[in-house]
Image (cartoon, rainbow, N blue to C red; front, side):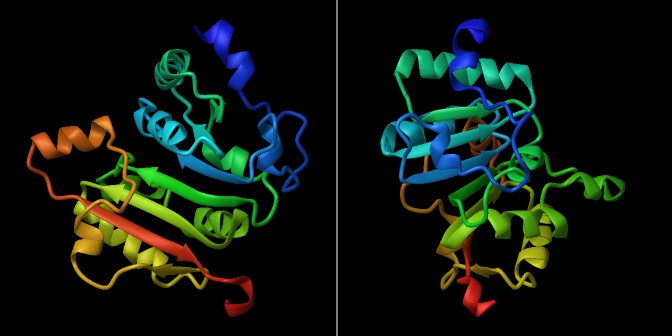
Length: 211
């Protein structure tokens, strides 16, 4: 599976110039919009989004080979042609993408790194948010979901003070319930089975002239 499908769908950044790659051109033919998922796990969310949005390019970043193999199996069975895979740290890919070139980013049920000494390993950090702000188009969305309320508070503490992001919330249901068009993940299913609370936090990338 890896030998057959990864050469077709894999992204190689070895020769990419820093901050110059238009991700729309990673698809043949180029697609008008691109969404990025950071750490897609088993790939079920990415595969489902690709089927539901065939004219949107879906890029998934996942460093673990089991996750890459799982997504490739789903692509082989589902026939999605609008998926590309980066099998390494998402930050390496993000650094090569052009400004304002991504229309949506997903970070869904990541490892919360609950111990204080491990908080520095969480993806949501000021430097990573600056990188996302650079590659997200004006009005684009960053969607973060977690079943760890400590990480939810951490995310809000960082994102609500970042000048490029605005939390999209009016009523409690806006963060307690999945947004429209939501595709479930296996980690979400586990948290539901365990009766854990979940937070679905949506942030909009503010227009650059307003920052």
